[in-house]
Every structure is written in C-alpha cells, then in structure tokens.
Image 1 (cartoon, rainbow, N blue to C red):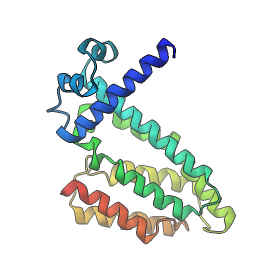
Image 2 (cartoon, one colour):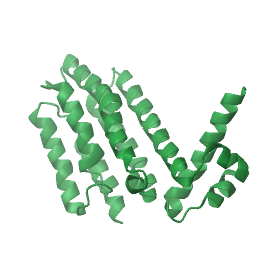
Image 3 (spheres, rainbow, N blue to C red):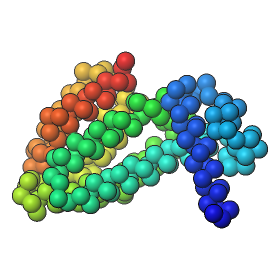
Image 4 (cartoon, rainbow, N blue to C red):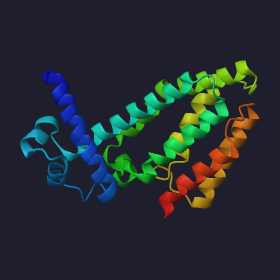
Length: 212
C-alpha cells in the first residue's frame, strides 16, 4: 500500500468515527477530542488530515454523496428487475441512511450551508441520470409509458432532496406524508407509476423518525 492509499484509508476511518459520533451526539456536542478517541488515532494524525470539525463534517457529507451515487448506479445496471421493485429498494436504502436517521443530527445544512447547493448539483448531475436510465428501461419493457423521463427524473430528485427533507423545510409529519402522496401522484400524472404502496409506506415511516 502506497502513502496515498494509506492517507485515504486514514481519512475514511476518521470520517467513519465522526459520522457515528455526529449521529449519536449531534455535531455541536461532538468535539475533535471525541473524534480522536473514537478513531483510535493521535490528535496529530487527525489534524494532519482535517483542520477543523467542520472540515470533517464536509468530508463525511461528500462520502455520503459518493456512496448514494454508487448505490443508484448499481440499481440502474440491474435492468432485469422492474423499476418499481428497484425504487422500493432505493426508498428503503435512503430511509436507512437518511439525514433523519443519522447524519441529520449533525445539522449539516446549518453547519456547511454551501453544501446544500452542492447537494442539489450532485442530485441533478449524478443521481438524476441514473433515475432517467431506470425510467427509460421501464419504458422499453412496457412497465411504464413515462412522458418526459429526463424532466421527471430531475424534478423527482429535487423534490426528495429538498421538499420532503424536514431539515430544510420545517413541516408537520402529516404535511410531509401529504407531500409523499403528491410525489406519487406527480409520477402517475406523467405515466411513471414506479412508487409502490410499500415504497410509499417505507418513505413515510422513514420521515416519521425525524419527529420521534
């Protein structure tokens, strides 16, 4: 293993420890010393890779983006499976790793506000093309007759990324559930009925964790 690989593994280990702490304790109450202890590394090693706790948080966020993109890319490659089934898998995955269930306690939107713009850009340029690919696969198989697959994919990721994220748009749980129902109706309106009742229930239950 060369020095660059060792450095990357060290950064990953630090981010893993920090992510767990942010999820358990919240960003504000987590200290760099907490990260030092949890990672099992020296203070010098931590500060060699990260100059501040905010920089650690930013790296954690970027890691989340990369992981989600790889997951959706892999789903898009599974063309033998129905789009509806794959969307249920995606919903389950996003709920399990969502801001509400973990990183959200770090309140990253407030701590790294510029990351919100980057998140939207990432959703449009990385995630939306994979969703569009799945929609087109569904069209080719006859599962759906989606009109405007490119636009539907982009609007869908923006709605999920912002509109139904309680960290960004404060709302009641009932209103959030209505938003999820609207998204399902929006997809149906453009002949992209890919959210099953199971997927809708998974999303609503996931959003509900934020209000517990």
